[in-house]
Length: 171
Length: 309
Image (cartoon, rainbow over all chains, first blue to last red):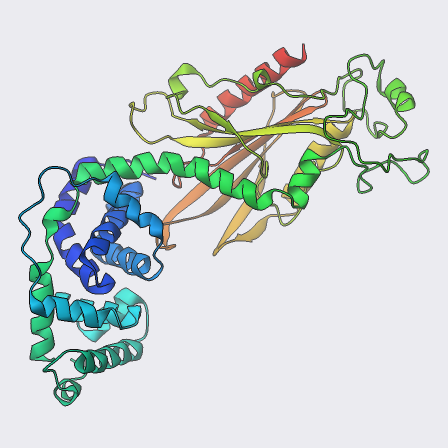
């Protein structure tokens, strides 16, 4: 393992963690859990920062860790809540909008790989081929995840007809 | 793409508040602190898995007769079918006049099958803390050592070198820092360090068995990767010593190869009827620093010689 440069890690964290948290939110279907997952993923990144600093796609690497943690989650991740205490007065947090509440509720009823594919597509605007590369599955599998995920969300989200979604099944 | 669904995700993105995330230095500190704890916990977990299985029993309750490397079949019988408890010494200690005398006084013990062990070497029946070397001050950041049960050698294609003829064994986990590593940094490595006392002559057998096990296991599968083993020259430590390396691809947290290689060094040293093993296990994939392993091997021998004096 090479030397670990704290400054470059901190810069990476500051420039990418908000995006990664949005991804974690969409994959985990819970804001608080997403915080734990994302911090855990960055902690793992730091532990091998010597090698990861030169990785061609460290953000994709992180998202993969987040996805795996989200599907194979251990309760110990809750340790983040106390270990990294969010001290000070609570932030003036705006309550989530109705659409967010609805989407998150629906996402929780989808399989993890569908949530992952949908998040990469809708949050990062990634085409099927890029999602396939990142998730290491054939493009046909990604198409199937997206298609099924959209169909299921159409059932679960109000005012979202499945016909409308199926027409544009695969971007 | 559905315009509607895009809107839902945009709403989720806007409602995801990054202010709740910890500052990066806090994440680093927590990761490092937990890594230190993890090693101790990991060793305990291994010990729990091994406890009660053949490995643990063989190493700890080694007074039971061992047919595998034992005496020839015509050796006087009554090989103590009643298993001796670990606290019962199967061989007399320092008063033994020599290998032959020892064998005649203790027919159940193995007569030395080779001339490798020094005459009148004593077989310790207990191993005090003082037999374990102390790290040099420059390598010790106060992590301490933990005595835990568990394997004292890495897997070698299923071989169990040195499992027979043991009398007592203690093993600890010891974390070290290289000289010059700043305080507060993660460790540079850690040892699985064991001391095993053998019945007369069997310590030499143990080292021979280890050499053979490494030679017979040039490659083995460990998890998803192939580990390659090789004997290295090891002179000048104790009465005899074996040094070998294990090399395997270094994986990241996603079990992807990083392109780097992980090198582990393991040295077994015999001092009389005692064998000590320093198995350097690294820290988060760091490779074993040879100079440090050599220096600590010398300290390990010195501590054992002081103890046996």
